[in-house]
Length: 67
Image 1 (spheres, rainbow, N blue to C red):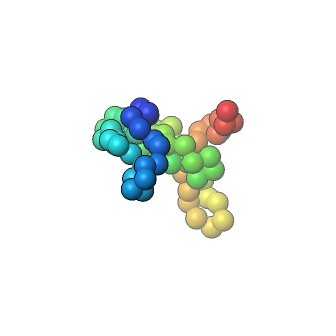
Image 2 (image 1 turned 90 degrees about the horizontal axis):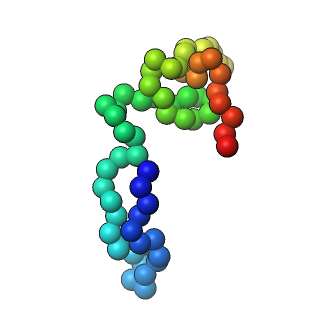
């Protein structure tokens, strides 16, 4: 994700002088989040698993540790 041009709070209460548009998710928009770690991944790298009586998507083979 790109950095904002100005992030200081001004006297009138506005935070951004100008903010870049767009989404932090690049590509075709076909991403889902892992139930355990919350990272967004393409559906091909997620697997279904029954957790607490519901079917949730989790990373396969396992979630990577956060750095």
